[in-house]
Amino acid sequence: MLKVEERQKTDALIEEITDYVLNKEITSEEAFTTAQYVLIDTLGCGILALSYPECTKLLGPVVPGTVVPNGSRVPGTSYVLDPVQGAFNIGAMIRWLDYNDTWLAAEWGHPSDNLGGILAVADYVSQQRISKGQEPLKMYDVLEMMIKAHEIQGVLALENSLNRVGLDHVLYVKIATTAVVTKMLGGGREEINNALTNAWIDNSSLRTYRHAPNTGSRKSWAAGDATSRAVRLAMMAVKGEMGYPTALTAPGWGFQDVLFNKQSLKLSQPLDSYVMENVLFKVSYPAEFHAQTAAEAAVQLHPDVVNRIDEIEKVTITTHESAIRIIDKKGPLNNPADRDHCLQYITAVGLLKGDIRAEDYENTAAADPRIDLLRDKMVVVENKQYTKDYLDPSKRSIANAVQVQFKDGSATENVDCEYPLGHRFRREEAVPKILEKFTANLATHYTEKQRKRTEEISNDYQKLIKMNVNEFVELFI
Image (cartoon, rainbow, N blue to C red; front, side, top):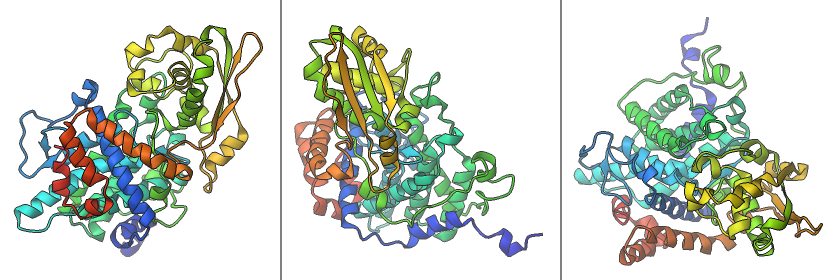
């Protein structure tokens, strides 16, 4: 029989996350400056998604016409929502086009998905404070919470593979957002612990909507759903809702025994700012990240093959094991969500067009018969060294190579790309492209005057960190 004090002891992993959120001072300048680029890149991706009706049909309040005093504003829209629905809206926009940042490890994911909850809560809390004559949050606070959410999600992902047990990676979005927004809402140790235990008990969605035969658009709003649920649980916790101390480890009934094949979840390294410093930007192409280097290689080969498409005998894509497991697809591709997660489709578009854009996944573009003709000629093979380097924490490469062979026996060079443009090893090269991407995304929605004003502040680190959150959000309204 367990003693009461033993029975009430919270799982160590949950306590470690709570300690980190409450007490860890982030001292890395690189993490903060990277967080600035993540912020603008992520919001830019959300603004671009507003051009797509399949995204915008999901936005707004649950009940049309609902008005929330001092609610969360949704960038690029006139919506003012409760922070739970605000988090869903922002989260769905961010993820819709599969163009925001990426983290690859035993589990995959997109740590900037957490911005849905962070920004919605930061705007709500700031306006609540102003209504009481108090100081609003600063954008520095948002960057700090982004760093911490990135770290929680990313370090959990290093060695705890949800995909191996059929669960979706957005569970880690829910965990990370829950931890940081509970603090932002005024929660202390007890409230963060309680909220986190409820987030783990919630479980996660199945990954089936990311894979044939069920690939569909849920993958574009799943993170919005996760980050909004996190805000809901956080708001309940700060009102005093109880937690469940052994949500992970309870024999027979805890997350580990029921859903994780009786494996122990672990944090393989101390929580600091490693993930933000090493996060991967999708700079060039809106495509699943395991295919980014294949896209770069295909675009490089475009001039050599575009006038010889009918002469192609075979296209060889050399890749790593994770890419084969996730995005090696044959047969019909039913919708944009299917296509932007197909290694062969992405490579074919790069070879044919010399570029890849979000609209290339739409039905009209996919009707080009040359795409499927090329896909049928593609052979995907694993390079064991690519797989090893993908998992090496000092490298974390995402290598692909593409070579085209022609019917006359000739071939292009085998274009090998080890690190994509968004990798930390190519950060200096990527930053100007990230800023260009932000400009282009804003230009799809705003007047030139508003775009320039937004960029002037967003791109200036010192101006940004001192700005009130509510005023920053107003730049995007």
